[in-house]
Length: 480
Ligand code: SAH
Ligand code: SF4
Ligand code: F3S
Image (tube, rainbow, N blue to C red; front, side, top):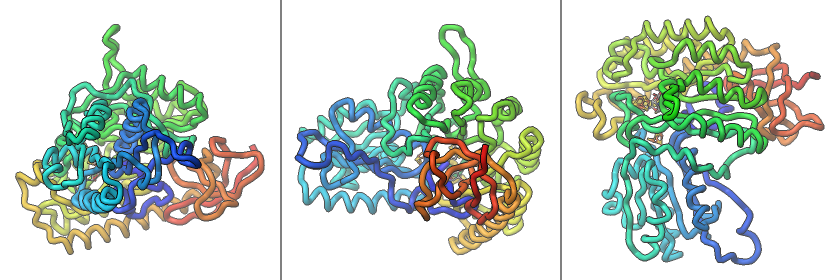
């Protein structure tokens, strides 16, 4: 569930940690004469939930008179929304802090804030390790930002890493500055109660809690009215969404929520991420099949194709269970695309066990995967219980084999689409050519096709595919 460029299906993407963080942008207020308004600059790393959180942060700060800027040099407050999922993600943040340090030397008085998962993991240690940091704010403490900023302006460095059991920011309307105006994320839950042994998220994001279902539907409705045509419901484990109406005691399940959001309008596409194989139910699959506007795409991370490794990972399913789940999905939604997350070289993994992962990629026929080698995270179950004993070269070699297998499978997946016609939601102009549109089909594949007059971002068009790479489908619009 990484914020990434979805055109690259099947290819290992240096997604979260190595690319430059995304920067929110708003030109207004920055041109011409100097305004006396204060400006914030925010860079985001990590998963889509972090990007979604940055929109909440932007909203909270704009309420107290801060304006967003893409230009770090004019910012009074520089923030970095961080990720701790792998060591490399944290290294990237430290590199960026060096850049901010230079900025601060040039403009004394500029405040630097570290937000998100790394703030939560390192807490006040950040202030000791990084002298330039003024604020350390965990994912559940963003409402306290105005207060922390104001104290920091008076010279008081501040830390708030309190993890809440209730906070969902349900009442905050995110400031969607980085958006294309067509697709938006909606956070439907926070935290994670699964204890996958490799994973730092339960420690950085706290306990799982679901957001008020009414507020989710209201946000989707508002987005539709503003011209958005696609929402992605976000959570670490969306299938365990469960919200009880305090007045009626009625319980809204994830399948119910999907239907409620899909009912907002038939022209509002609904996507979701991430599904945990142990929690996705037939009810969810039937709901997907019933609604044309719920996209036929499931991100169902397998992590490993081997049952012994899955047990060590504490994923609570085994290879057979996962295979049955895949079969069930294709049975109920025959044209569903499935993607995955895969970890190479987890503790004690043998060559044979690694091969089980390769064969799982083939069996599941993933349209794409996010692929990583195992990176031990301090404090996790795996770090405490198992030795990180697979040498780096072996991890890298196995990752390469996983990438090769996935690329081949993605290529075949896309080749099968040649000749088919898909309903595509136009997202904007293609990066490669301003003569082409880009958009996605229901299966979340990027489709590129020549522009035609009278169409624009947010429109649905039918596109027949005549060419495919492992990453993109290329086609032409056909008349309605
Ligand atoms: N909630 C999602 C995943 C969130 S983290 C789920 O359960 O599927 C995104 C992905 O990062 C994970 O699926 C996993 O493949 C990868 N990941 C998490 N911890 C990791 C680690 N310590 N080393 C390497 N990859 C890791
Ligand atoms: Fe991490 Fe597992 Fe929770 Fe996903 S389900 S966030 S991998 S602990
Ligand atoms: Fe997301 Fe990274 Fe945190 S993946 S939940 S930003 S550790």
